[in-house]
Each structure stands twice: as structure tokens, then as C-alpha cells.
Image (cartoon, rainbow, N blue to C red; front, top):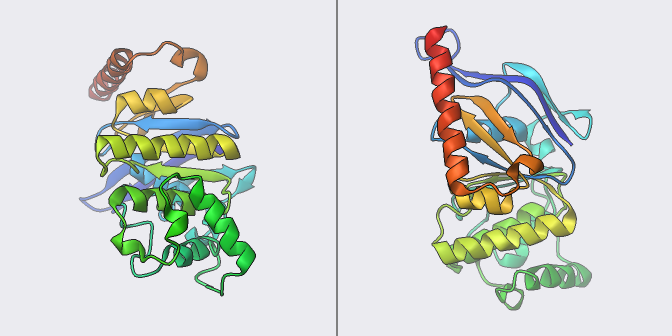
Length: 261
């Protein structure tokens, strides 16, 4: 379970450039939930992920993962139990290293880079994991990752992020840079891996259809705040038009509230 209690993040505090990136965010995600997050640019979605992963420390509040307070835990230590995937397929892998070496690195999460020789058993386990992607990468273990296509690299990044079975998976628009067909392939792979491992997952997306199709629950964010948390009951029969209407109404009401203050 992931719990955020009164989390606020302020950039450039006490200067003319001060900006509240997150403002009093409270959130509780149950074990095994797949939650999608929507919101415009600048809504605070990526800042939320950076704060959960430890790249940014909050100005106030607490973060708990499975009842452990991780608020001040260093990012590399959190990577032992938090997997993360980024929008850019180039960001989650080491291009000059082979597929096998990249997967070996994935097994070193939270321990800097203690790359050791891969045993025969480990290599077979890697092949089995790669085979489940259905992209033939298990036959290219010695291929440098830099020559793979964007979709292949992102699928490999997904496998790397989930290889050590993290307690929490953060997906930051991880299909936005892919063509529609490849994006669907990676999203379906994502859903299968998450379901198989009952992995608690948060996914940022600008695609309303994907938010509904893949998320059990949906979060609407704007200007560093969570405006709505749509649970499974409310999500039943929710259409893209319904979600757009909800998003528009919430942001309109929020701006009216700010103007009246």
C-alpha cells in the first residue's frame, strides 16, 4: 500500500520564482491497484513521481510504502522496491551494453552498480523473462541495446523496471514516444506483467482512453493538487466523454474557488 500524507513540494522557496509544485497531496493506493493519472502539463504529475521515487524531497508531509516511512530515504535505496519507467525509451537502458548486461544491472537495483558475471541459471531465467515479451529478444541476448527499436527498448525497460518484482511501479507516460501500434503492444505487456505479479502501479497518461482501459482507478490532477479520485465503482461504464467532462468541470470549479479566495 502507498500512502501520501499532506505532501507539499515547493521549488525556489522564498524567492520571486517560488512555485508550489505539489500542494497538500493526500493519497492512498491499495496493494495491487493499477491507477492511472491524468492532468495537463504542469499539473504536478511527474513531480509526484519524483517525490515518491526520492528524486525530490517534500517540503512537508510523509510518504509510506507498505507502512514503512520512506519520506527521507535516498533515491537509490528506494529503487530496491520502486520500479520506474520514463517517456524516453533511451532513458531506462544502457545503450552500449548488451541485453544480458542490462538485465544484470536491473538485478543490482539499490546497490549501485555491482555487475557480476551471469551464471547459466541466471541467463536461462533472463531468456524466459524476455520470451514473455514476445519480441524475440531472448534470441538476441548479446545484442547491444542501442541498436534496438524504440518499442523494443521500452519493452526491455519495462522488463528491467519489474525484473526484481518491485513493491511499486511508476510509469511516467512510458508509451508517449511510441507509434500507436507499438504503444498498444507495450501497454498490453505492462498490463500483463502488472496483473501477473499483482504489482501496485501508478501510470501517468495524456490518453483518456488508455486511462480508462488500463486503470482500475483514475486520479485527476491540476496545479499540484488531486482534484478527484475515481474508484472502481465510479469508473464502471465511464466513457472518454464522461472523463473529459469530469476533468473540465473539476478544473473549472477549482479555478473559480481560487479566484474567490
